Length: 226
Image 1 (tube, rainbow, N blue to C red):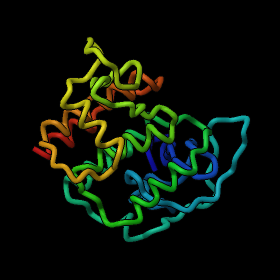
Image 2 (tube, rainbow, N blue to C red):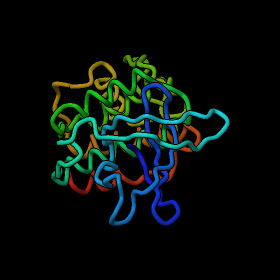
Image 3 (tube, rainbow, N blue to C red):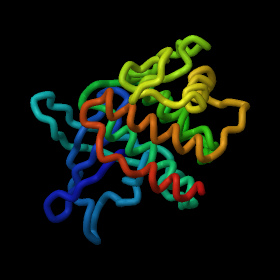
């Protein structure tokens, strides 16, 4: 579950990342109100659901026939603030990066694996998550880092020899290289540098994915991690 919007008096329009159909929009009737047959706690960020849906390819908005939580405890769990901020962060990345009806099953499986585990508060998760999404969507930075090309260029998506207005400083460039080599670096990077790299990768997504704009959840995450 990625996003919900109220619809009519008792319904919701939901954006859902599905394994078979990609990002899809559905109407769920009878959710809002006392007598709703579907409980609203199922629609938390990244809630993992089993659904039977109608799939009319001639319309962008279909109906859900049956819906139930795949993992009840996950839907009912109350997260601490940092864990909750991480879920909102990952949800917003997927919501703004994915395109309707473009299945990305390998990315779905990656997100599903994160969801099936205990909440992960690793300091590396936001950066590794962004780079994994970039790889599955075909915009992963090229890791050609070397002493001759030590600056990462946001526009070109690769490391270049000379600094310019769109390159990262050398410390962030080398840090990005480490994350491109391994999702869980053994090196300890200061919070300020990790924060700067997250902001940089958000800018990178904005440059390379149409519609990826007005991103805000990383600001909440930064504030909680201080």
